Image 1 (cartoon, rainbow, N blue to C red):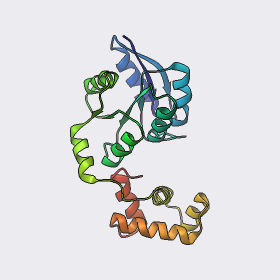
Image 2 (image 1 turned 135 degrees about the horizontal axis):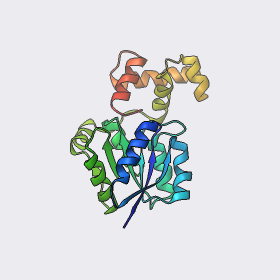
Image 3 (image 1 turned 60 degrees about the vertical axis):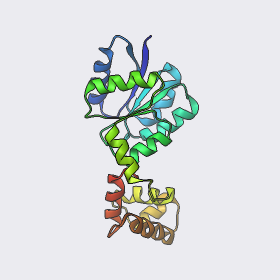
Length: 202
């Protein structure tokens, strides 16, 4: 049986190399390749892949959000997150979004090939060390709105700019930032962004 694959990564070189690598396998066929998260679902509808390999950080829609939409609209397509960022928070969010596999890009090529075949057999595939780290890290303490505020703050935006972007009052933004700083144990908002980012909460 041929396993039909969709690749989504915003880096052309990575996408091309992955495609060439996977096409070496007799039972793999790359049927679609996209460079943005918001192109994933349309490509999946058109090409009907068995497995979608999604990067996390992409323009338009990140891989975790794309995975959730894909899982809701085309549940027969299995999602494997393939990312540079092996962070506990990302893994937890990936599983919540419906992904059945999570592979870091520095894994050996045979690990990715094996992961694709295993998810096709109905297994979940996650690096054991990352799974252990995820259990140890626990759930993100941030609410969805606190996460939104920190995500916008990541660019160095002022309170007024965050408020305008998220359609909130400046006082509300300050409250969310204060709560996020407290929950991350940070000294200021940029430290809170770094901590939340490192733990995969954003």
